[in-house]
Image (cartoon, rainbow, N blue to C red):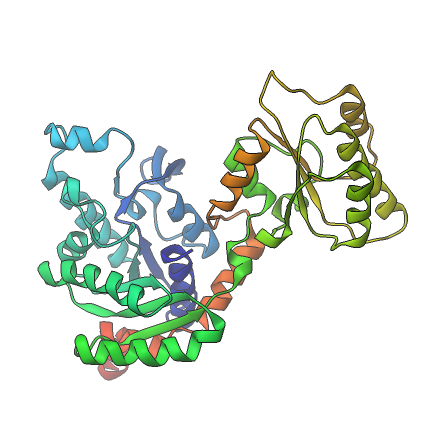
Length: 384
């Protein structure tokens, strides 16, 4: 989590300072979904982060068509190189959107896509977009010292090339044990090498924010819960909570009984006894008022392996909601996919979204940010 989480926190903090109308757009997007535009009275495609921001902050004064002016779906790059998409058309779409959002908002936040060079092949890098709309830029990078500064230096070079002013830097996912060290030395590094570019925020890592929920696994594997209710879809599991079942039936049952009650167990479709033990223990916990929040992911290639009739019957006849997923890959592939997953914020997972927003916001210096970007509040007071 990086830019979108930071944007959530920034808008949350800005809303407290500009309560009437916060503007937001993502000039260039990639992953998109279909929504309805009120102004155009038709369905259009917009970047998925736009939906999250618009719904989370009830930005009713903005229309989707202005919040995601340029999308780069599959095939777009080839069309641009072939001359089927004009550079002027892209620039005009972004500048028109910025004007429309700015005209009805007290302050406008634009979210970039990836690092500053993303979009360069279609001449729409984040740095170039910022230059086109006259925006200052806030760089966001993951915690550390040397590698973090190196990454930021590359991004700053492109900003300098396009004469984009840096308002500051926000560093996230900083190891809590190294928080003070990172904050101190990165601030000193910026003052020594970058003149007046300040550290606007240094955010300690909160592992929960990167933990996948069952809803994330549904998307990852393209499946739905075999069993369980809607609330269970938003239970989160840490890497330490994920256990591959390779033990005997007796030891697995002992594991269920003796270890923490929130674990994600991964087993193969052919392990019928293990699956039935999981279901049986879930019933036992329900009957004895024991808190049991574990889930089961059943793996096995489609058509080659199928759930046994006993398992199907146990799931269908269960009077207890038990979170069970089935995916059609090997257990090894499932574990690899889960460990490589970076969960994305979405409007449905309200708990994680709110937690991320609250956590990030408290570590950002909004007064310094507004001072660096030209504080509209101060200007309004001076005019009054």
